[in-house]
Image 1 (tube, helix red, strand yellow):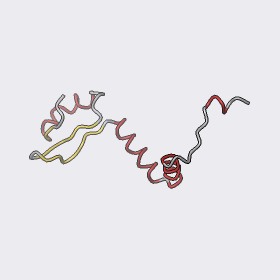
Image 2 (cartoon, helix red, strand yellow):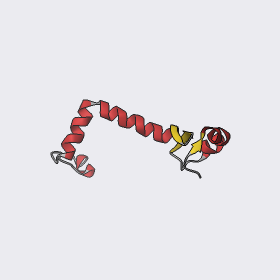
Image 3 (tube, one colour):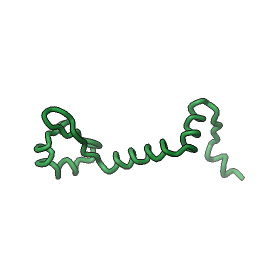
Image 4 (spheres, helix red, strand yellow):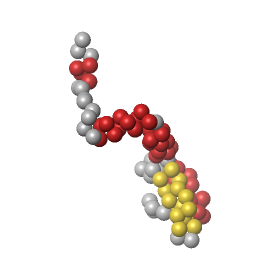
Length: 82
């Protein structure tokens, strides 16, 4: 499938673009300049989840702690050993 579509091409092919599960986003252009994207639900859900994590101070602290090597990890089977 083509990687970038003009607005008129995207309008004409919208049903097939929406059916293709491999396409997570499709750039839409006007006069050879990208003006928008058609996103799959899966891709949009991932973007929203990432934005929610970035907006959560506790999540960001946990991520920073993990990146700095200060996080201690435990195997899941050890959590239920008792």
